[in-house]
Image (cartoon, rainbow, N blue to C red; front, side, top):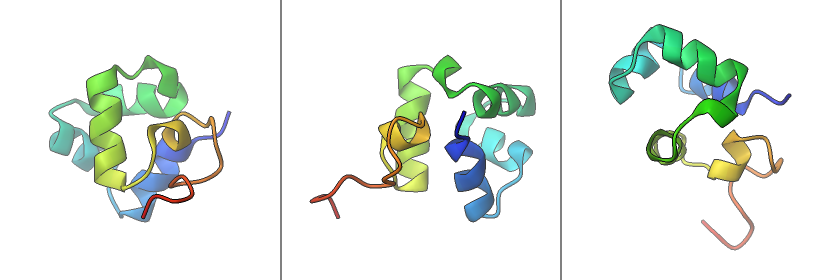
Length: 72
């Protein structure tokens, strides 16, 4: 499975702990999300997409495009 959550977190230079603090979640939750992004609830998926400035589909590995064409 594509792990775009981990790659986006690393792109921003965040540790799992730091990302968890930004979202009000613990490191173990971030580890779980990175292992299986389909365990993320809608609210947090949207927050991650906003933080990473990418689409939710990209975070879930449903598309290889970070941002859909025509959206800038």
